[in-house]
Length: 122
Image (cartoon, rainbow, N blue to C red; front, side):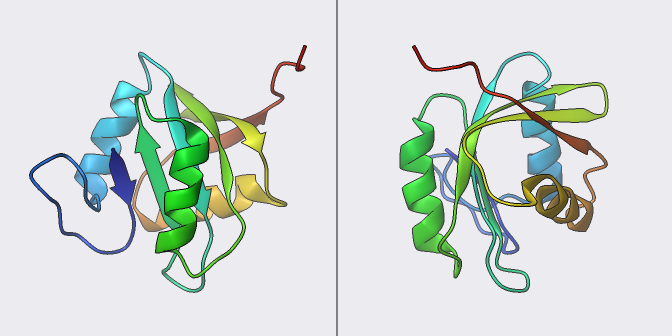
């Protein structure tokens, strides 16, 4: 599991908060495969972005909610094509695109955020 928040300390098992270099490395992975995410906007400098290759987005959302001061969480999957981060949400927040773009700018990750409509449930 990968976490991206304002702090920078990491554990040996791959869990931990990511710095900008680690975040950029995960977005390089997202160019080739879909990553699952949970984003919980908190107060100032308390946003939490969790990225993972395998864990269910619902579980990531619960963990993001625990780590952030915020209560609302957006989660789903994401891919990167060129400089565009395409986010497909299972659960969406108002102004998610703007909030996530601002968070990425603070982390010095120059990606445009685009929301995609999820496929209809059958």
